[in-house]
Length: 103
Image (cartoon, rainbow, N blue to C red; front, side, top):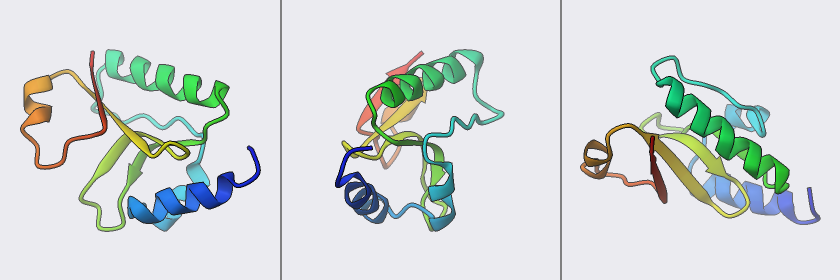
């Protein structure tokens, strides 16, 4: 990681209200059992791309109040990715991710 990355990461974690125990999972690929194989592959693809770019990420990260889960969260650019099989359902939610990817 580059100099200053930890400050940026901490800023994103605070802004997104990420639960404190998620920090130990930075750059780990965690999969949800209810995801389809296509969703899992897309999540892995995004995570590998971020890793190769030197951008720390979280997968399956929860907010402190457990109301929001991020499929993938880029901790440098502060971009959250939602991977879905149903774009209409995703767009009807009260919170819409920065990037929604339909598989």
